[in-house]
Each structure stands twice: as C-alpha cells, then as structure tokens.
Amino acid sequence: MERSETDGVLVARVRRGDSRAFDQLVRRHLRTAHAVARSKLDNPADADDVVQDAFIKALQRIDDCRNPEGFRGWLLVIVRNTAHNYRERERLRTAAPLEKVASAASGDDPLADVANAELRGRLSEAMNNLTELQRKVLVLYDLEGWKHGEIARELGISAGSSRVHLHVARKSMRRLLGGRLALENV
Image (cartoon, helix red, strand yellow):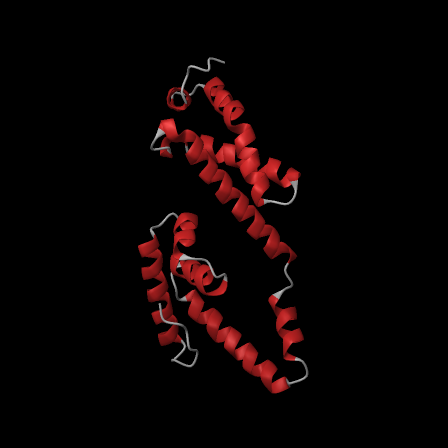
C-alpha cells in the first residue's frame, strides 16, 4: 500500500471500480471506525458488526461522499449513525410490549383502562395522519428528548427543518385530537 495515496485518490479509484483501493481505505480507517463504534456500544462483537455494516454502506454510497479528501470524517458519521441505529433497535427489542406496560400501570381501575385504550387509539390514529418525517421528528423530540441538531443529523435534514416539521406535526396532532391532549409549544 502506498501511503502517499490520499483518501481522495483512493475514493476516486473506488468510484472507478477498484476494489483494492477500497481495501486500502478499510485498512487505513478500520481502527478508528471500530473505536467510534465501540464508544457507542457495550459489546465489542456488536461494534464489529456495526463497523462492517458501516463500511458496506460507505461502499454503496461512495458517490455521495462530497469531499473525497474528507472520507474519514464522512465514514465516521456513517459509523456513528449505524451504531446509534443498532443501539436503538436493541433497546426496542428488549423493551416490554406497550400492552404490558399499559396494563401494569393502570392497576385495578377498569375505567382508567378503557380511557387509556381510547387515548392510545386516538393517538395512534392521529400519528398515522402525519408524514413519516413529521412522525419521526415528533417522537424523537417529544418522546425521546432529542435536540433539533441531533434530529437533523439523524434524519439528514437541517435543524430549522426539524423545528418546522415539529411545529406542523404538533399543530396537526392538536387539530386531530380536538384540543383534548395538550402538546407543548415549540
């Protein structure tokens, strides 16, 4: 491997179909990518899987790398996002089903159970009327507590766009729920 070849030169070679150039990029950035994944995950084996997935995504999206000399930074964003998505999938897999949580929380009050079931149904119906992007922004901001900058990076939009989608989603939810459920203002 010629160390004199910059990431930009290697990316250009990969774009022309040179698999050896991609191998060089992998060898060059594997340790750093693994360190980033490991910092986001508890299990080293999970970090290995995340890094492998991230490199595959990078290869598939190599034409999206706007600054080939900045390949390392672009790759590390892919690693962070892949690790974040992996962690979220695992969190959802290990979470208790909503039905069990709702029934455990309501106790022995059948009227509360009926009211909660109605509310869940209305919320679900209202959420289905939002666009996918509005729904994601609303959930990440209001339920997960993310900041607009984090949402922007995760969804590939600007922070301002995140704010607009949140505002529109909340307005729609208020209208669809008839004002019975108070949602915070932006």
